[in-house]
Amino acid sequence: MDLRWQEEQRAFQARILIDDNPDVALRPYRTFVGQATTQQDRHTGRVERLLLTLVTGAVVVSVVLALGITREFAALAASFTGGVALMVAVSPTPHEKPKHGWTPLLAVYAPSVLRGAAPVCVTQISLDEFERLGSEGFGTVVGTPRPSATFGLFVDDHLVWPRTPPRGPRADDPGFGAA
Image 1 (tube, rainbow, N blue to C red):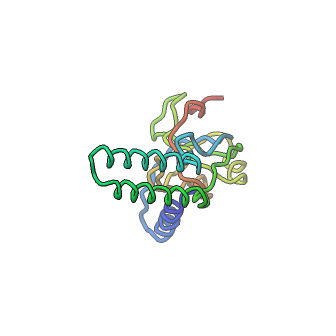
Image 2 (cartoon, rainbow, N blue to C red):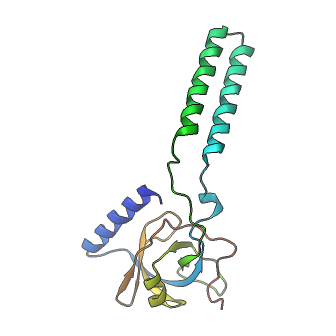
């Protein structure tokens, strides 16, 4: 999970709870089961970072030698690359692996939507919210739903907050009004 987004979401929630006139709009929504992340959300692994470091170091050393700069600078660049590659090889992965399981998702659509239209953004919700919201309906959105943004959804007297940074639509996401 993106910790910066999580902090922005918490700050947004606090602002909404104390704001007298929040920015609200009626929007259609749909709940379904799918993946909360896309392939673009995939981060590089340790092996990919190591290969990138080694290739970059080899290019830098080759350029230094090709330009006729003294060999001591090339050796310095090579030893620096080796040290960075060693650190990359033994360092822990700094991010969580995306979960490939199926989770309850909430798709929010544009304010005026035609049948079959793609969602504006999709985010993960809890199983309780998934059951409470039903499959499709209209809710009052607080904020601006778009990928990586912060927002909330009022349905009747229940407020739903996204659990993951909203992502853009994918081809397999259901359109509005699809059975």
